[in-house]
Image (tube, rainbow, N blue to C red):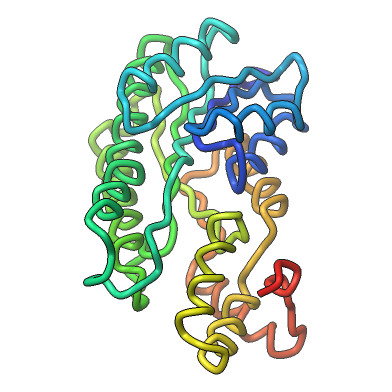
Length: 268
């Protein structure tokens, strides 16, 4: 790979995407920062700056916007070595029958269709340039685990894993474009923090204490996840699973002794 790889990260104005972009820049990469929210993207760009940074707004539900992202990135850097479909939304954590229609549509549009279209745009471009790697974000539900009130979100992430694994098999080992997925683990992003504030209000303090103990055992700050993901992606690891069942259980057991409290740092 190029000694200064060029990387596109969608949904990178905050949370995991921003942490990943920060870690990649620190490792000498050239990075395209992208997000649907212009004001948030401007703040993120101001925090990072530098000649190896390019900023391009993008709504991943719009093919034209994804194609514009590819063209802007290649115009700036010549080629794209890594394309990371990170953008995603978390529907309300509530019983399925209460999830609004608008959120059902939004979850599929961003988490599934956005990843599929982003992958297609990058795949076409990378074939033309002679190769590259694409990483798609999965999350809770990708491994078949179930949890109440996460039916909508988990469905989208299971779909992304299937799509990615199926496409990788379709392309085969000889394809110069490699496609894989990454599971960042349970990361305390602005989205997950806000979701869990609503969960706490809905379930009450007694139930929340039980939920909180499990979350504290596995939760990480975005910077920790970003560093680990950057290392793994640049090394070409495929897939990248930062919270497989074995690690999840190990951290639960370890927490009985260490009593971590990352949620407490966010008032949870």
